[in-house]
Length: 152
Image (cartoon, rainbow, N blue to C red; front, side):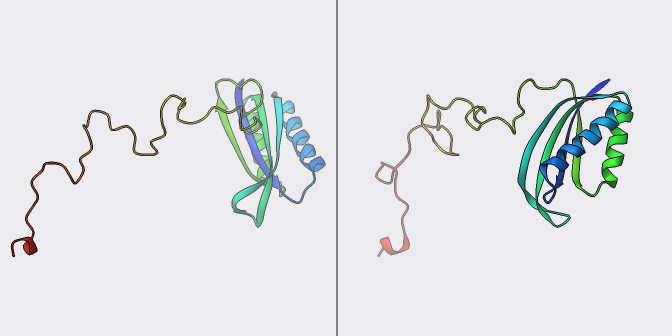
């Protein structure tokens, strides 16, 4: 059997108990078709980037699934008919991550982008000048270009 990560968004006006009922319904569909749900994470009510079916918020739920593709297809087919489900996405993975997903980790636990920057000063988006040599200033020994008003 294949491993999948499945995330679905449900309407903002249903209760947490109804979200749990949706999870149990889809768990039953998967188990009846030879699969199983390994982990369920409720990410909670979050604001959407844009409106979906007149909803500004949605309940996010992650399911780690070990099931044949026919079971996942049947679950997705039934999600299309359920008016409480706004969107869903299923991704086939090689292995499930151990521990909490990235959405459930605290911000301090997540690795920072850009690697370890503690040993060098922050140069912003310019980067290091490297071997380009010293910066030239106006007072250096370059000859100045004559201007029209200088010749008078």
